[in-house]
Image (tube, rainbow, N blue to C red; front, side):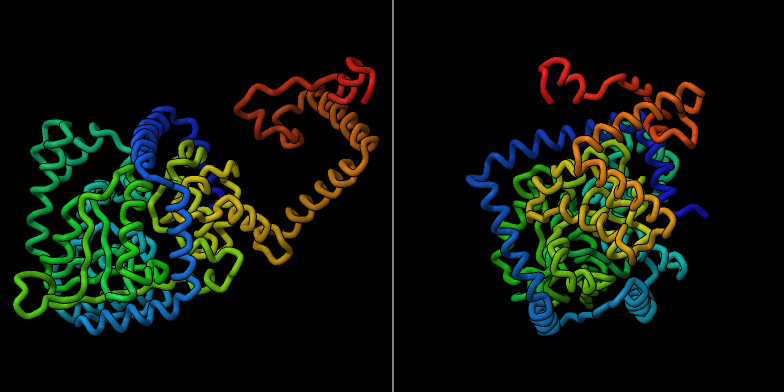
Length: 474
């Protein structure tokens, strides 16, 4: 069985060479960038708004225990229930127990990345209880038996022709690729599920400590249908989603919308505060909140990288990342792709995902667009450092070879004469290797580049020598 690193490299090579796929992604992200820039310019001071979000999240994360306990007290006071899940297994088990205890026959679910993270759909598949994704993008990839491609736009890798063919196969009676008619077909199919489901599951964009409410941000009505029509509603959220006060949504909601989709505000901004109360015409009979840790406490204990937990899952860093634009979301093989996934996943899923932190150009574009000012490119560097330290997962032979190579480079770089000498040796050795036909073989240090590119000519003189010949001085 191949490792996650091997799978990533294989898929990256395949997707980077797929020009049609890259064109689809580029078109989607370019469209987002135009809208994002236009909406961002409506802010009087975008950088000041980012700083304010950072400060609020810093307070929330650094006092997480206090705010989570306040949130729990207020949820219970509103008639809801709170379950603290240390890991994915505990979270899935609790949700499954609620379903089995209440005789649930069908579940509808709105968009939630944390339910992808804990593999909730697989747990219910084993129980034989249908769990239907109702967000349009999630619905499309669910029908294709694929994970989401992007944090915000799960089906951005597909053309409308592909979606029309999928709907014809899965739903039937679809003879057009017109977007409005495709949306209408999905709506008709899902409307039956909304009104026959016993349980609705949602995520939570924010958990509001001082009111015990969850805040949902969607562009489709499915979120409200999932949370209000079934008799049981379960909200699943990572513990880092906490906000201290309700009034802070006045900044978080528009900043999330602008960074996520380029909108001034999302179509549906919803607050859910517990089960139906006496006299209320609708809402669930039971309301549960599952707070998922799943490695977040260990990350919280790391003061250097703690700000990773500030993430509000807007997806802006994915859209800014040249690596994501080239290899696509599925290549990462993780719930969270792109820069935030490369930073977060090794902490949530272990050292076998260390390779993701090397899948970056370190251009810093992700840090520049992050609305909560996570220092993403430095976190990538820190993950790289941790990946190659003596306690890391990598094998000793590979690590020893790297250390030997860098020791030689250090020795050469500390003196101009040595640098010139080693440069001359390297040029001579490369010309000799290529002269005897070893270009592209295991002995060629440039074999990775030469496999898909024209090999550069080996210069006869160094830059230092050329400079001296032209200017008469070093």
